[in-house]
Length: 316
Image (cartoon, rainbow, N blue to C red; front, side, top):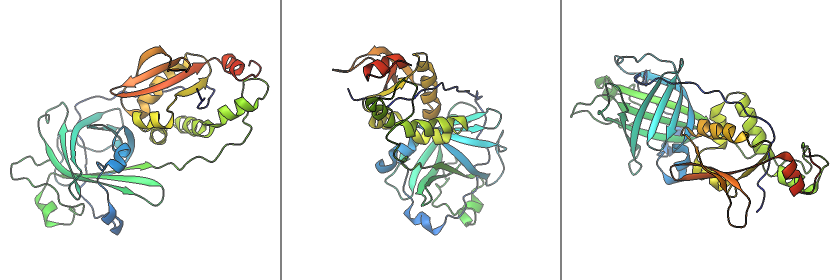
């Protein structure tokens, strides 16, 4: 089986706890969009489905039109979007989660939000959403909705509601503006890549060079504790499988399995669990399989000496 690259080194992850029940604060009164939003694409469009699921977005603006609900007060840091859920994380570890349903056939796309847990569970908030793919290499996601659950409450019709009569009548109007960088492809790595597998070998160099640049970018993002950038590299299970259809081979001790399980859980927002500790694809080598839902990710862990022997290089 073709090797998809190796990366040496330990990864340390620190997780932050998040309490439940806090209400989503300061989801802002809808502000005018630029002229570029004429091309806004609903997030549910199948062409942008990876951007909808399993991503960590930075909250760049959050404002409430009208009185705040209990516990609304600001401090939004990140929004973790997974299939069917949006979880907003605040400074101090609080979290507020809502389930969502999309209708991408509308223009702008419709979104219905339902709080998960807490006093608001059972309510449904009507909203709209749109995704701007910026020329500068980043994506902006806007979600505008109303907390007004009266039968006569109207769904927002645009993202300009801060100045409109519609917004002035709706004191429950909210807008959430999220951003996430879109990473450009890494430059081609050099033909010879330094490694810790002993004497250099063209076979080893070629194998390591295949994903060295991607791995280094991931490690750099984790070093900055920038899970948003890391999520851009490993966006969702389907994308991971597409990028590494034969798995990822990592030189180093097998104890790295847990570090990588935590890594993928952190950037993917949903927990990946070890489905099979030793899985051997047809004609291939043993692998560890991480799984969540229908997504499966194959990771091949080898001791450095084993990898070196496989490619004819001296042991580390």
